[in-house]
Length: 234
Image (cartoon, rainbow, N blue to C red; front, side, top):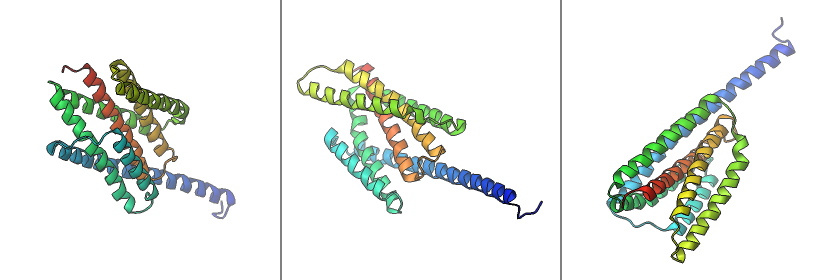
């Protein structure tokens, strides 16, 4: 058969395209998890600094404003080398916000160290398990989109409700536990969804892929810590 046969040429193009796509996906996955590892380590470093220097928590509003501002900065710079600096600024800032929380748990609860270790260990196991499953199974999880969005709306409304009730001195321990449990489940779903988006090419920028996975891990850890704290011995 002639090498100039249109069918042969089309087949070669198709195979070459699939190979190129697979290589691009593998590179994206490798870069994402390498950057995620580095940002988690940097976040742990800044959290440690906040604990050593006993920095106060900036508060919910300032944390939210700082996160949103740095997130949009990272998004706008995602295609340049400055995007790397922005993602480290974002994750470093989030580390500074979680350091005072860990300090509070350690000094408030007699088993505070155990609670922190439990939350960290469970977060790591869940992330590695779910992310590993999404990477190996190649199954798409885009069908979770609507459910995750609806759950996120419910969680936001619940958080706002807790904030308002707490201003009036109303005990909301049970409601906090329910909301934290919901957020943990949501983050588990987002871990599958976000990893699947990387595998199937819906997310092609490793900086933004890193940010989404980091946010999943951060929120799961924080809310597992809250759940354990509500069950912990004061």
